[in-house]
Length: 636
Image (cartoon, rainbow, N blue to C red; front, side):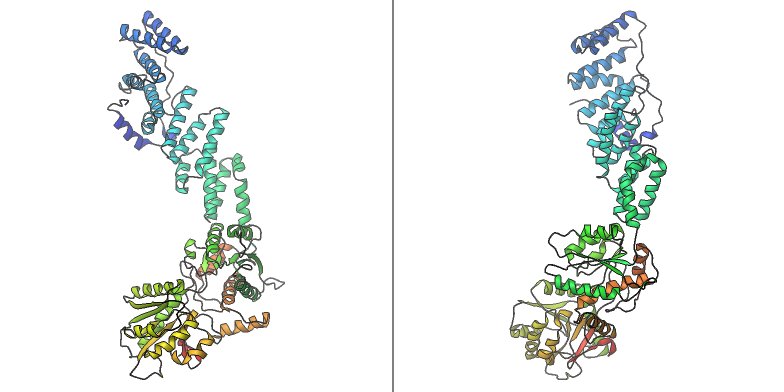
């Protein structure tokens, strides 16, 4: 093992504190060795050793230098002799001996004329031994100071390579810059620039920014790093910052334009917008095609509600089909933005496709209103909005309805006790989990009973449930399942709370039913067992005038009735249309309008604005079954 001596810990501390900035080096240049001896005999023996060294006769040279030390141990050339013997030992892979010779000079301290050369050799040898921290510690104080061009380049390159081996990308790029400033040959220069290009794609924007501060703006490395910063800013949707960085690069050196041609084109294409053109990503083929086609009808209907310009033109809708097998939502978003200059995008619906689309939309800075049940999508960024059915909001609305019913009645006092009867499938488990989470937030809990989704006879389940203590019953099941469950519950003396239910010999509970549990056929089949039940419904034919107007307009346009999905497509497009009608002219202004508006006319579903995450705030309406009609609780 090579001896490092007592100075190495101090050197390593020096490495920690001065690591990194060649431009801060203020020490004078290190001149080539020029010591001479006043003793002609010593001078002659020294020159014989040097000549043998230059001829690669290393053993013979070492013998001459050894003889010199024996005969002329106090001569001024002794330090040079030690360095030559160290270099010979290094070339012969006698590393311990090499270290000892170099240290005889180095350990004399900075007053020794050849101290810096000893540091250089110790650093270069440490690098060869893969002792990279030690190499940097030896070389940093002398890097960039040698007046001999070849030695200077060798030291700078070794510092660069040592940082590369330490995976310190930021310092590596700084020292590549120092190496290039020392003017290597053209082949070496191109190799170093190639290394920079490989590095920048691995670095975070924070590391790139730190490195940029230490680089010379007049040099190519600064321009390469700055161009990468601009690209990352552009991809992250920081368009103003990207524009500013590009301008700084152009102002620093007009020759830098060659690095920016592709980026400038992207920025210019991205910034161009036809504010009255809206993109649409929907499944028009594949298994979701019927839903997608219905949504598209809602989109097209909304596009004609406002008219723009002297020609009173509707919005232009540019449609892309996400239902195919080989779909790239990222490319679709890029095409809509770059080629068609859309102001906003409506869709997609499929959660997997939507996750990819919103990422690219956020990066390109185009507002996107997704029509997906995935409630995590808006976490991607501030250009992403969601106005679609929400299981969580249905649970919230139903729990609010139960609490309001309790306040209006002294039936239960102040204590609500919950139970949940749910199918053992994905939907049932999800809804039961959401119920538990919302009750936890209220400091409450629920009795839960699950059943096989194929269950036809709910008798035993109802009897089991009848033995539990509860006065609110959550029923997240399909209307077909509820049509079977409701009579079984009644047979077990469990009935929904309603003004008409006054019997004292039965259990009365507030029934809470999400939207999937309602259908017109349910009322005709089992309505008598569900009087007073509370249903969370966004879309209801006999609902408020906004829904009825939409249904009437849709039927007049398409000669068929709309599904609830068509209403979501209509509302998303109508929001964009209303924003444009308000006078916005850029995508950023449109995004701000969406984020800040608390109401918008002519929508199908309730709307109270978007929250800070981009989720629609409004809860669905809750209806109570009375006879064969559903009555809005807000109107009761």
